[in-house]
Length: 256
Length: 256
DNA sequence: CGCGCCGTTGAGCCCGTTCAAAAAGTGTGG
DNA sequence: CCACACTTTTTGAACGGGCTCAACGGCGCG
Image 1 (cartoon, rainbow over the protein chains, first blue to last red):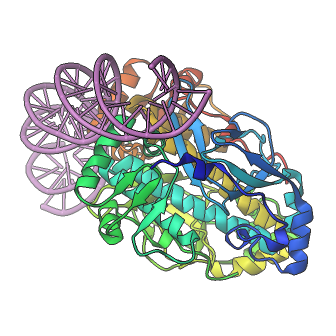
Image 2 (cartoon, protein in one colour):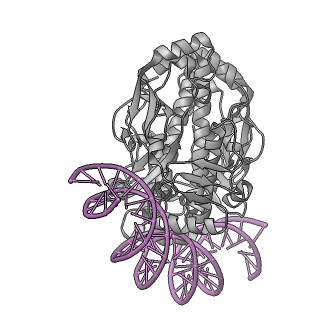
Image 3 (cartoon, rainbow over the protein chains, first blue to last red):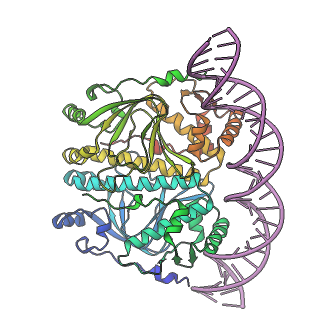
């Protein structure tokens, strides 16, 4: 149980041409020559250990990233130490984009949850890139809009759902996102996740203590089994039901 | 006090060429000939009374809108009637954009809070439009990213802030957005808003009763004076302070 | 072995809720 | 102008979900 080691080693990103996560990511809609251009555009590759800050709110920094391997999260800290996790990042997720517009000040922080590797793109080039490749701009807009829809769903969770519903929702979402990424799906409804109950608390706006109690009640109801790195959802439909889970939001683009 | 009538009459949108709110909106970065193209792109103009639904979650509908006059909001309803307001819309706000990608199912609803008028753009055309005018695509991406930042700030509010802080934050935000839109700023720190305490409750994730009590305490602390349609913020800096208000987020693009 | 991190459990309190009702403001028709 | 219905705001009283404070147990690691 809790083999953190398994999460600790992230693999090194390949050339964009051969990248296995590209199909999930921003640069999905490219043809061969375009991918080469994207590869030139990539400024560097970064590898970080577990728990390292990628960027911090308040910093001026215009880089954007594609998470290649491992987990990370976006979060916001209030002045007195309270923390809200805004989004969990999985391999293929593109994050940190903010154009040269505005002040360029980061509104939130990012940090790794496991050992992680990512591709770094310097912010300055996006404007030119999108002028040359409008399809990319449209794709980015679509991704941002989808992020928006997810954030809205989370707003409804934090604003109007009970602790049980919120945690059910989060577990359902993570379960779904992880499975989506692994092609073949094992029948036992188990996925591996690196989250502590503290993380869950910071994402759901609850205290770790109450997260613990709520998980206990979900376990007793045979809806969620979470021990160590292993999340099991015996009956996804039942869980989705009490979570009020909206499947539509997490669908992929049908056109591009 | 409470002259709802003043809010009830929305003016009719003009030709895009002469539109006074365009400078706030999606089509800001256009030159003269481009604006003409946008005007052709606009499919119709819509006028609605107070409290009318613009679109509903679950619907399949690909139109997008620019609010021309009046107020509206985006919201989400849970199965049992709980409601979460996701965003208040003011004149110039562009909303309802979702490309032909994905299922095209609306993830949230929109409704007018006052009599309102808006310009309607059919969804199908955006792809072509952005291919021709990448600057527009970039602008839309920037706007979506900014919306995202605001939504994140709201997530932190709902997840980690107390009732007093949440309401202080919302009042501060609305106050700021309204003032931003009116060029010259009267010195009495008053703005006109059409929100009921029920709306505030649905936006902050509280009950109307508790909103009332919290507003009372803010009034006694001389931080927020809200009666009828009139919101007064005697000391914006003090209010921003207890709200943990982040001014950066609401800044305008410096480059395009 | 000792230390730190994480998960677990208990007891009591408080913020925000629920239920209930009255007061104030708004709109309609006679 | 008043009577009436309806919506919005205000207040009271009591409940409860989630929080705070506190302690203990398990596991990995030096």
